[in-house]
Length: 317
Image (cartoon, rainbow, N blue to C red):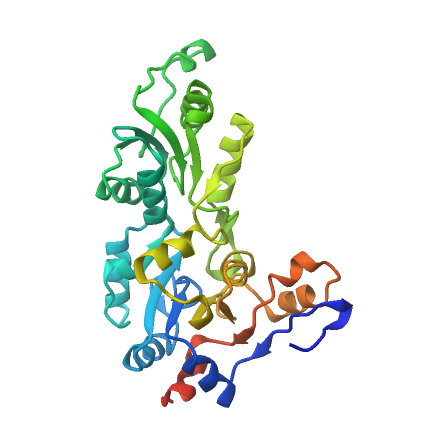
């Protein structure tokens, strides 16, 4: 790639016309982030379903990689169907809930369970792979004084604390999480689904993301969580183990530099940014013109205004 101002070596280019046909033609697998790339909330992004339909018709393998831990794989396949996307099987969806369940199934000894700060969907994915768990839903402090909080019963089988998006996150849950981690020491795993610190909403507003909850538990426990979601490569490794894909023939399509694009770059994938989500072209330019080498890994190979911009290269309009 051409050299950039500031001494960098990565430059992001608009993907269009013949270049798009060449890039897509050289790939056999595309990994898609979902919200901000394929849809916003409950509405598909214009032309996104048609684009994926063309890719599927061309024989491309389509997989979906998302840090959202509040939906099961089955729920994602249903949403794809409802919004008019090509049919997908649950095995094509790699959400952070499923990947966390997969990690704990490998890492926990037989019969061990997990204390979960997360949604019913996260618990369901754990149960689907045979990992017992407890914790989802509201929780109250077990008494009026700190001495009561520190003496609430602990399940002897818990050997992991798993933190995902939890609308019922509370001081009571934080206390229990810390007590499990202190009791088990290094034998009790601390796992987070992702570090997304803010979830943008329509209209420019936002709500706190899972990363805020993970940080709270890490701060209390004075230890770092293992993160299964993007940008960590564990999520990509899950895809590889399922489909045996070749990184050199795989495209990562996303709207966030610090998760989607960074994972793609770290794993040797071609990276494609869509501007229908949270990232602006100005942010990309700031990274590619920086003197800091670490920021260059956040620069995608290509960008499009919308995933629908690929339609002409696929024979559509």
